[in-house]
Image (cartoon, rainbow, N blue to C red; front, top):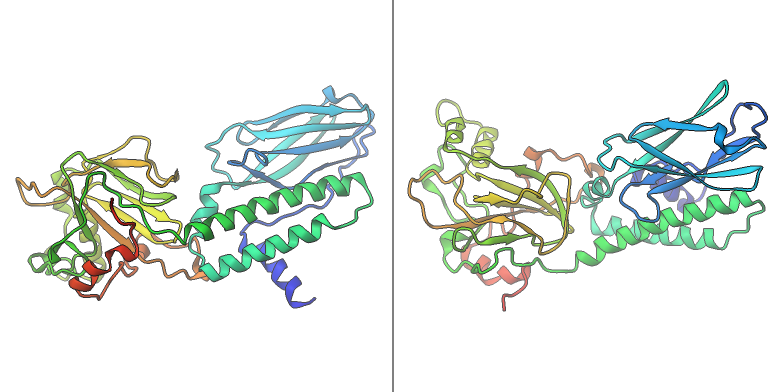
Length: 382
């Protein structure tokens, strides 16, 4: 096997994290059923084209002898029949289905057959592939594109082979578009996330400014930007991305969880700092970096973990939750950008603590440098 074939095998089975299987599934004959197969083993829950699959049953029996049931409320509808071949459209109705694989049971007199479909969610794909390096994403994009071209030019003998090949091409084109979209979005700068907000102009409001008054129970360093705006100002997503964490309902009683006494480890300091963020939303961006939106007054009810966000989509409002000082009125969005190490080998496995341990954007730079180079990553305000 040559190098390209080896890469393609690894790509399909490991890089995707989705094992494609297009082999014909033969059933033990029931009555006089010849065979049954699906176009592929995948259902893409968020894709208009690929959110259903086809189940083909070859038999002279009438299609109404078959009954269907299974995980996540499958809808199975007879799409066409010529008397000998019945084509059923299989769709998962429960969009909140949390199963990685669903089983669809085909029941006929005296026999039950089972077809298993892998459920592919757009959020899960982003959760993994946003941790990929740009070079590895580009490589995956090129390999998928090449494979699609080869399949489109392949000569197949039977109708079964052709319809399966068409499905395979459509699935790979989905990934071609998916990878291409991430690569294109990585070229963009971030949107300024606070409507009516202002870029920091003082050194105490940018990354790396000292916080000596809390250096005994945190690392004593400011990790992000304080973007000043009136209380209640709308905060929007700085990029297309996914919501990986939401912390809401903060009350002053949370301050009682701060560990201030005894031996305080680096982990304790990290957790203390997390408490001081108050209400917060974490957004994993197309670049892979994770934006911490902290001190929010309100998080809009539609913002939930596991959702996909669009650039500019409202997230919540400016507040001061998590700030211990009574009567605090210096309202702002605290924005920390955690720089993703883009280690492809660890893609999709990072914990909250891992992400909190990533270096923040501009870590180690002077305040003057950070203020001068702010627009290296953010679009300029009008």
